[in-house]
Length: 242
Image (cartoon, rainbow, N blue to C red; front, side, top):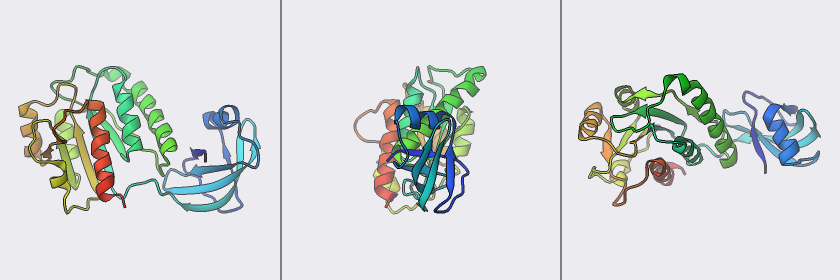
């Protein structure tokens, strides 16, 4: 069933809601929906409105049939801290992290980053990443749209990531398996720190451990940077998303 966000909406069965802008055009032109067809709207705060389309035009109107809590949100908040990567790989990171349950994605710069984001380009890039996050949230049935933060320095990233109940520093030279770190835990918040194409330096790994993060191994295979966060988030979902 098609799903769209209508942030901040409040409604009860029988109420009429309007979808406008790009979403309305998508419903009308791409999906070619017509009155009488079912649709789900979400307020972006964990509530779904199961509805029926009543009118299609410049705006799309729907009648709310029932209201229920969204089932697409995990019981923990997972923030992915992703080192800056080349080309459009960060687009992939955002899309797949959102699909796998991340509540936010935050870029940062480390010593081996080939890509060095230009602060002047940051607003435009963040706007694109937010759009990707919103589309991925709709596609995957999320109850909220994950956020995308501004670019942090390595030091600021460590300080922020260490605040989580479980702070994971994913490093190819770590010896502690991810499963051992998660065993017996029931976290409300999780930080997942992923390095760039060239990985982290020994000094960065030491700094992370000193800051309170746990260096963890993701197994015997070396994952691409754009694959790693999805792998970790899938394990979190297996362990805690019940």
